[in-house]
Length: 308
Ligand code: CP
Ligand code: NVA
Image 1 (tube, rainbow, N blue to C red):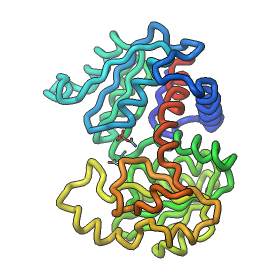
Image 2: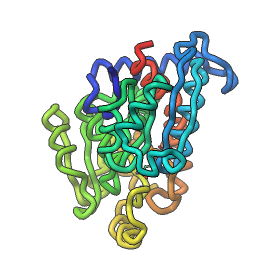
Image 3: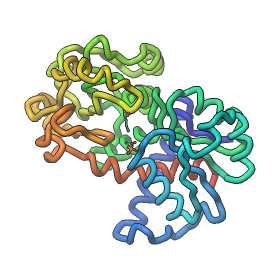
């Protein structure tokens, strides 16, 4: 059973295979209409359930389109519409869904819900974001970095802002793909130490820096994300904004990075909060390539999970 639950739980050779496969699937369909089927149809006769307990634009649409391009079928479900949201256990939901579908993609709140789904499902389960991690996003980000700049191994990635779920998957990737990672943010919003310790144990240089300019110096890639994630209480909004304002990515901060540095954001962005319009729409920004590559990277993840 191949679940895709997190980047640190997946073999580095398999991660590399998926990134390369995503790039070749992308180039194989260059210029075709979005709804045109791929030449090979590895998901023919496969049924995929996409379950969302939180809102989504990219994850929802890119998984749906990707499965269809590969010949499969999807059903998109929201947690509140299911008995899952009305008291049925996760374990029973997993057992039942496994009788109907070939794969489950789940976006949820607590990581334990995902892990319980994976434990009891008899089909592969993919993590479509939890409060703790967002591995599909970072697979797309690695693909995007490499399509613009070549291998990410040995490069310096600087994260500015909240030590959140997207940062955590970057930390997993630092360990698995071998790049250096600097976190720049206030101590109150530091990532969990376990993510940093694990990346270091796998040989990555991981640094915490309180000064944004020093953190970005020499960076090959600058990344940020929303200051208030979907699982964060809105009551913390003002405090978070006050603490994170010094870490906004603007043109002056980008100028501290290497001249060929890229800028990434998983989106949705809150323009002129964590990133200015000038950076989002500037020449170093690859945010819409990242969004596109969710499609290609997840197609590779789906194929790997199903062994097709
Ligand atoms: N980046 C990302 O996962 O976007 P959605 O929340 O729109 O799926
Ligand atoms: N950190 C954000 C990512 C959204 C794709 C959140 O969890 O809301």
